[in-house]
Length: 319
Image (cartoon, rainbow, N blue to C red):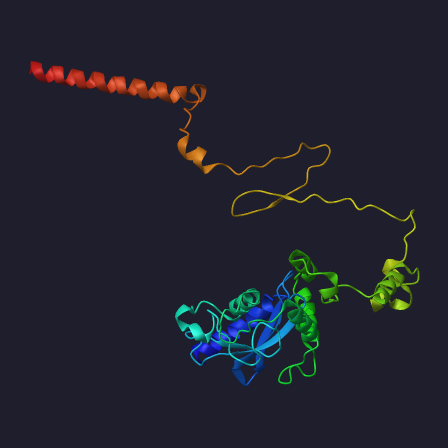
């Protein structure tokens, strides 16, 4: 697989894993990843394009992302010509300003912000269109359908389904629309996926609070219940088991269980002997009361040996 295809697959995955409620883009078919269509919401108020939903096409070169893509709008907006490549700093008209680190997400964010800009002779741009006409086209754009990828769905339906997917991914769509100042009449209603219907909620509450929920071997929502274990136990037969304390084990390689002390025996606290203290502490001198006879005999024997040696030396000198 080429580097370009790997990059396009990665961008398609990122657009789904980190979705934006303001736009969606995807390849028209799985057989051609270089031809994409996008659906984008207009800029927030007071833009004349606020409330509009526009559809367009992205054509990517085989050397993407080394070369920039080209963009064209398929929905009339009053800002860009229909089905003509537009000139932007992120499009193929300005390859000198394109950076391979940019992508389709970056381009769509830029296009949404460029819509409020002045055309000023821009290739693919429209000049002289009044704000009243732009607002009329913004309203009409919501019902516009793409014959190539829409499958009969309007721009509004496509973006609504995409925003429901955003809600499933944890995106707070209502909060973002409030932050942009989109009026309530221009917002796209989104049903939160995690919200339960009133019927399901009522069914769950009935099944949980019903006193016969555990009968016939079934609990709420068909969960099996063991009637013997769940039967109430009389208070007189309820006993509290006495916990058995764990056995105390002596340190060292050979461990033996020490009996648990009873009320008449003191509690034993066994500690592992410290090898450091044993190595650094000198031995204590033996008790004098036990070794004094042997010590006296040894001293006496040494003295006798010294006397004998002195006498021998003295006799040798006289001779």
